[in-house]
Amino acid sequence: MASSLLPVVAMVLVSGIAVQLLAKRIRIPSVVFYLALGLLLGPAGLGLVTLDTFGDGLEAIVGLSVAIIVFDGAFELRIDRIREASTASLRLVTVGALVTFLGTAAAVRVLEGAEWSIALVVGALLVATGPTVVTPILEVVRVRDHVAAALETEGILNDVTAAIAAVVIFETLLLQGLGPTAAVLAFLRRFGVGVAAGLLATGLIYALLQYDITGERGSRPARFLVLSAAIGSFALAETVAAEAGIAAAATAGIALGNADLEHREAISEFAHDATLIVLAFVFVSLAALIDVDAIVSLGVAGILLVAVVMFVLRPLSVWIATAGIERFTRPERLFLAAIGPRGIVPASVATLFAIELATRGEAAAAQTLLGTVFVVIAATDAVEAGLARQTGEFLGVTPMRTIIVGGGRVGLALATRLEQRGEFVVLVETDPERSRIARDRGITVHEADGTEADALREAGIEEAERVVATTGDDDDNLLVCQTARAKFGIESLYAQVNDPENADAFESLSVTAVDGPTATAFALDNEIGRPELANWMSDPGSAHDVREVRVTDDSLVETSIRELHDRIPGGCLIAEIGRGEDAHVPDPDEVLEYGDHVTFIGDAVAVETAVKRFHPHE
Image (cartoon, rainbow, N blue to C red; front, side, top):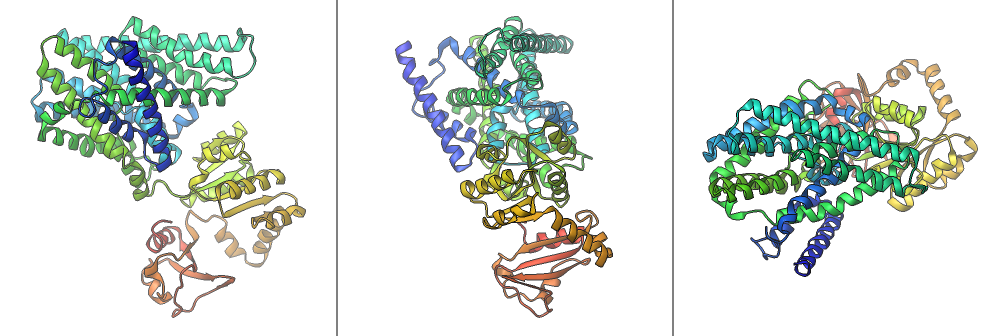
């Protein structure tokens, strides 16, 4: 058995890691490739992986893998990050989850004619989105923090509640025939067991880390001890109550992730690497078990069910979750509505349920359960996850980034002004207090040393349009600009110069540099010579604005300023045309040339509308 299992395990693991690298290379969520690879290796394809391949060990393998994955996602859910979308997240995991649960159950009952007990089990399972599918999406789709926080929080918490609810409904309603009261009590018991086990593991591991009983310095003991919290809490909770382990792993992850730990970055990196390995293995293995015949047997009912889940229930849940929250723009709401793929938890639990139903002689119920769950998993992973990047780009929720290194007064003020103007800003800062203040203003913050290439990469510099260095050290600012240009090819570089004598060093690198005395003199000159304009310009992005765009649309070339004015709204005018070294106020009959820089000035809303009409991708 061991000799025959080894090649299969090695093949699944290696191929899973290989497609993961491919997915990162071409910027498509890896879950899509896991799904395709699993189908290729499974009974519907080459038949190399079947339900009998792993024998009785499948449940343990999947359980421990899910524990590590959920723990890793929960570890990154810092309280300040959850706060980014606290109201929306709370609604998604309560009212939104309830809408999805009852709506899916009703659809299964009506469209497939399934018994209510089966329909409710399916409804509970398909509430789960989960980090197994959300994390790969967010690795290739760079969205603002509050959008990512909503998806991540929903994924972690819904994985927990969905797994427990499905087991409770399956056991109390389907197998034992008990009533709703027994189901609610069983749910609370399992959830309580999971939370208690997670907190117990957290306290034990934290104590071990504090007292350093290992006697070994460095991050290695911390990495292994923290990861053992995921496995230990999961095993402890599962021993007491089935499926309580996911709640334990999530609780331990959130608790330790928000504790004051040394070597946090090393721990996080280690947990993430472990997640990538087990994710590659377990997702491919479970995808290989997808029963294609069960999916096909659903026929039109399966297609209609997918449509209800994707185009009715998901948008309705998101609309309820984000209603009245101004921070979420309309494109961001549409993006959330379009992203709700299902992952490992519903697949693994549904497989175990189907096996138990089949052994009880209820093959038809088992087929309905498997087919329904897997058709939604396959469709949402292929469409919602597979097209996530394209969806984000189409809706404009993944705009070009501005990376600002340095969260002091200058960096924070600049980030605030750019955010008010609708730009996507990432502030790179090492100081926790400065980071907290920036986050409180709604700015995306990456806590790291911005002079390091890896930190800039993690902040999303590869998708950035410009980099601005605003630290209090000119050497650091110069190093940031050098790294951004040499390693990442960023051409638009800006820097604060603290000592005017260092300005030449920045200019030699073609960095647009502004020193404090010159900036102050310019501001005072405006206040003295043109006070009304200075007051008008002091707060752009609120009631009024000034924006510049570059002509890159061939349809605008040879268009006169007079004709262009007819295409922009009232309250806005074209103030300047920049062409090479020349910048001037244009005549009405002047025509645009490719590469011209056009400056709009006027009411903020009118300027924004003009920019969108003139340059839709700005």
